[in-house]
Image 1 (cartoon, rainbow, N blue to C red):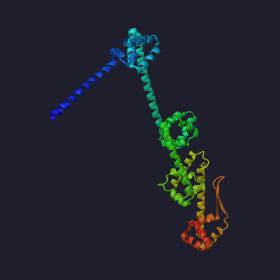
Image 2 (cartoon, one colour; image 1 turned 120 degrees about the vertical axis):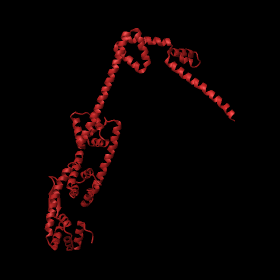
Image 3 (cartoon, rainbow, N blue to C red; image 1 turned 180 degrees about the vertical axis):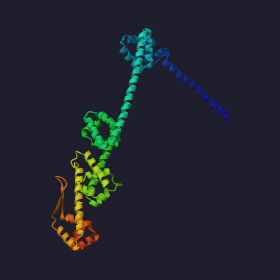
Image 4 (cartoon, one colour; image 1 turned 135 degrees about the vertical axis):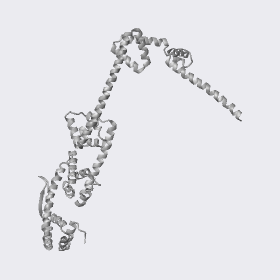
Length: 413
């Protein structure tokens, strides 16, 4: 069995050797054909006589024809003025290095001095071009670093500062839209989206037209996210406007749930009086100041929105008025706590029956809110000591007691 196996294997090895030799010969011939003019010319002459493919090889110029063409081209270049000859030779060198070298050799045979001069000028031109490109690359790199540094300085100004400064520089012609676009592309897309969202519409659009396509898509995505955020905050504004003041204030003061930026948008979209009543209940005065600044910032960013215009001043003025109102309440409470419970019950009956005007609290030349005697009495009763309040309620008739209890939020008896 072993002998038979060996006999079968030997022919396979013999077949591999001729194939390898043929492959090597074919590769060698191909290289020579494309690198040796004489061999390629000789091969073409032979293949011209071959059937089917011969017609194609007849179209290939002979070695002599090729040499004649090169000689003609060499003489032609020497007849041209230097600039034209240099331009044509540079183009040829880029497209066919071998042909360029052949033409230069033939040109040297006809006029060595002129050809050497042309070759030197071509070298000088290439060197100058390399230096120019290096300078351009260097300038672009410096500009990129400059834009990056400028962008960092802009972000330090904050969103409103960035918008105002960029708009002013464009208006003053210190920066054009292309330059601003390059600066903006160094911002984070989230920040850039807000800058362009709150900017003047015409300026914003012109900047967008100069942004790279990829960065513009990032901006579009972030803009949609920001629009949804504003919508969500406006929805919360409506919800908290309809809650009881104490409940709304307690929930909105939870910093784990809402940031000061969230509150700025929520309160800016509320009625100023309702917003002020909720804010008046905030326990941390320092945090209240932070929130008021966020309301002002959101108003400034949306200066064209009529429903937001002036909201921060209205809230600030109302908070001052509410402070006076709360002092009045405290004064009345201290006075009422000195009264007998029956005497105070009679006063409750009197002040909650006719609902006459008690006092107008003026916020500005156009805005004011009016507190009736009933409103005032209800607020005072909320702040009375539990024992006194219980005695006052017990001295009222059932209908009045039930009505007052409901208004001050006491549970049903």
